Length: 502
Ligand code: FUL
Image 1 (tube, rainbow, N blue to C red):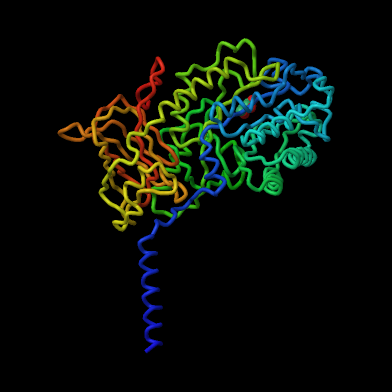
Image 2 (tube, protein in one colour; image 1 turned 180 degrees about the vertical axis):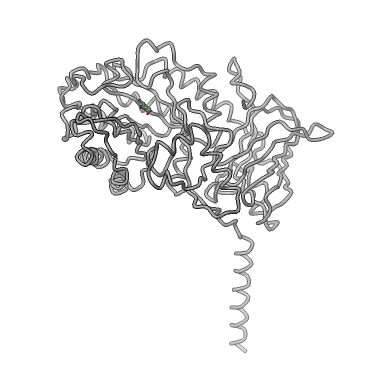
C-alpha cells in the first residue's frame, strides 16, 4: 500500500513537471543567434569614437608618417572631460584611435620611437591610452581600441612577416596593459611599404592575440564579430539583417570584397534571399555598426568649429542607426588643447535632451492588448509581455505561425508619432515585413510599414490620434517573438527631425 502511494506520488510529480515545462515551452532559437558579448554590445546602442593624434596638430586627415613627434603637444589634455562628455551624452563606450595610419602611437610603445614618448607632452612621460582607459574605468564607460594596421611610418611595413609580428606586438601592449577592452576596431586600409611591396595582413593571427588577451572583446570591421554598415554617414538601411549568410569572403578574410557588398547593398539583399529560402545555408550573427563624425572630418580642424552637425541632422542619424537595428558610433574629435570642443559638447547635450524627452512616456506601457495568436494560449507569451517595459519577457506566437497581429487598447485617444519595436534577438532575428495601423473609429489605417525589425526598429510618422493601435507582423522566418512594442510623441524642440521615416 505504502509502495503504491509512493509510486503514484512520483508519477504525478513527473506529470506536473512535464506540464509546467510544456506551459513554459519557449520558442527554440532560430539560427544564427548573437553571442552573449554581441547581445550586450547591441544593447549599448550609442557609442563614441575619439580620433586624436598627430593629425590633430597638423590639420590633416591622413598623415604620411614623416611627422615630427615634437608636434604632438596638447596644452590642456583632460581624458576625464572626454569621458564626462561621452557619459552625459548617454554613450556607453569610447573607442580611441591609439594609432592611426601615420603610425604615431598615443601610448609609449616599446616597438617604435614614433610615439608620445618622443613628444614634449608631459616631457615624454605621458600615455593617452592610459589616461583614457583610467577615466573610462572610473566612469563606468567601456573602452574600445582602434589600432590601424596600415602604418605609414614603420620601416618593416611591406615586409609582411616582420610587420605582422610588429603589429601583433603592438596589439599585445594595448590589450595587456590597459584593463578590459570591449571592442577592437580594425580598418582594412592597406598600402605599400618602403620596400615597394604591399603588406599582406595576417588577420587570423591578429584575432588570436585579441581572443587570447581580451576574450570578451568584439572585433569590428576586418573581423568576425561586428560588420561595417557600408557608409560613413551613420546610416543603416530600412532592411538591416544581423543574421547573415557566412560567405566565402568572410571565411577567407577578403574584407574589402565583403565590405563592398554592404556599400552597394547586395550583402543585405543576399541575406534576405538566404534567410527566406529553404535551401540550407551556413549563417552567422553579424550586426551592423554605423560610424559617422559629428564634424566633416574625423580629426579636429579649427575651421570646422562652426560645422558641427545640426541637432536635426543628428536626430535623423540616430533614427537611421539605432532606430534601424544598428549601433551608432559617433566620432567626437578632441581639439589641440586635448578637449572635446564646447560646440560639440553643447550639441551632444541638446541631442540627449530631445531623445530623453521623446522617449520618456511610452503610451503603450502596460495597456491592455490582444493578439491573433498567443503561444500555447499561455500568459507567459501573451501580448502584455511586449508592453511591460521588460527585456526578458515577450509576446510569441505558436510554432508554424509566421503572421500575427497585436492590438493595443490605449484606453483613450492619444496623439503619437513614433513607434518602437524590438524582437527578442537572443532567439534570432525573424520578422521581415510588418505594418502599424491605427483605429480611426470606422476601420484601420496604416501609419507605418517596414521590413526587418531586429534589436530595435523606430518608425517615424505624421502625428496620429487614436485609441487603438495594431502591430501587424506579416512575414517572419519563424514564429514572431516581440519583446517590446512602444509608442511615443516627439518632444517639441523647435524644429522637426523629419516627421517621416524617409
Ligand atoms: C577610415 C580611415 O581611413 C579614416 O581616417 C577614419 O579613421 C575612419 C573611421 O576609417 O577607414
